[in-house]
Image (tube, rainbow, N blue to C red):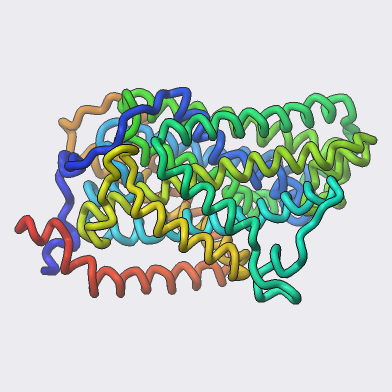
Length: 461
């Protein structure tokens, strides 16, 4: 039984019956990447990190986090093009490091996606309430706060948006891509409006001092704003639904990451240029800065952009979570019946519904904001393994066809692995304890269920 722990799955082991429907183009994947990346980072984290960690040097924090993400993105691009599979880093770890490591990575990716969707839904609910208030409407407290808040019972908007996305993802994936396209356009227009206004109202004196918290603050800030970059890895779960996965998936990953990094750095520079960094620790720093410039309609505009941005983040992260569960279920590590594909839509509806109900309950009834801290550490761990996986595959599978080959090998994989680990070390100690507890829980699930039902065991490997 235990021989399979470090047995690697053959590359062609990802080809299974009941394949998903190939409809996604490079353009679709790029927009999905933008949809997943641009959200809470640009609308909330920029101001928070500037005020408490990095000051105007938050632009360097974004650059550092973006560079670490770029190293990981290049590794993802090579492995997605050469290995494929719907399970993202989970599938790569299975083929390169064996079943046990793959399970740990997949288990933590699930935490990343579930926590991200649930916490973003709570933030989405807050912006919706702001929009309603600007229109002279409101919901009673017991319908927009969890039971752990005085007077609250259920965060109904958060529940409803997750149930809506559940329904949407059960449709043909092409329908979801069209929906994502529409809301990505809305949030990009919102961001470009801010850029066009702020560019003519910068006060260079606001950028001094540039390093009020020192270089250590910049790195601590990078560990936090890294949250703004997670999501591009969800594109690697779309290999089975991409028309030309060997070309479109790497391009979608890199195009979306580079564009979003440029947007983040530009917005951070302008925001700290029009407003002193000490005044930016707000729920909506972008809207507040525009209001102080005299744009009274800015609050509603930014709220609308934030609602659109957060919706697209939830959509793509939910999508990624469902495909990772699909891969783990196909391998027998989770119940195999979860991997059934709906005949008409060619989507894993059982998985989508189970995840949707779970995340709706979390967002509606629990104060899970603190769980969001777990998202970064789980993602960084997965990114580090993916970067290391490139080197492992170069050694173990030298003849493997690589339609996209990572440049400057082995420098890039080494830089990617070390930068991700370095950022992990700058996260809070309590976050590490939570990460350890969740991993131990995952090991218990694996040794009670997964190892006994694994397809590797049943195949005799």
